[in-house]
Length: 280
Image 1 (cartoon, rainbow, N blue to C red):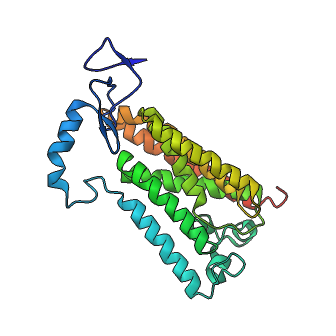
Image 2: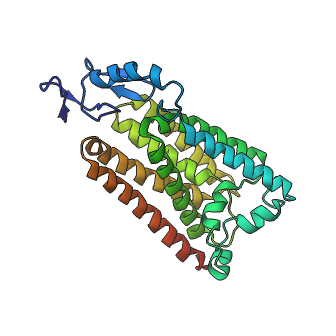
Image 3: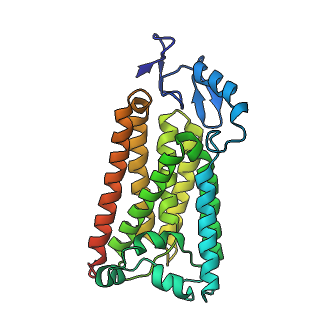
């Protein structure tokens, strides 16, 4: 158990969400993105007015909004390309961009590993995914920064593609669910690491309910959900372990990036291998 940096005799499991220093209950200040130490709390108060017009610097979830916009635009393109808003009637975009093992292994259409994560089989599919992304993104992105958030999102997307191809390479799979499950897993780990147990518990219950639905309803990509969740949990673990070191040692930042890149590379390699295994 660590001790408060201002009160060495007091043990604590909470750390500042900005600088990572351990803090006791007397020293912590609650903020929308976790607990802050006295110094970081004062700094946040002092600089916030000057940054009000700068979304990125003020911690606004810019990437979350951009990702939602991209998914909506792609869905409109699906409809404009002759799609009816369903997987069976998805038109040319789902036919040419959905995740499908034979198309990847036999025709070399590797882009499907990423493009499938921006396609959706109907308005309800899109609306549910974007609603969850909106909620989670507004929690996680300001807490860890836009670059880290995008890393978690895309690593989870790739891991979700690996999971979907591993369990069912011959079925067309679309949707951002793998990436969103990963964001959910990362949020739980990081919230727990920072001592925000209430958020971790609430999202944990939400995750369990979604997993029950995934296993209960046919037509849902269980592999995509589990793969994305695994990718997000690994990213969340990397961030939780290294972010405190990264605040003081720049080398830890590169190590964090390298770990995420390695998870992404393994996911892509696994997806390419699973795409050519029709017997799985």
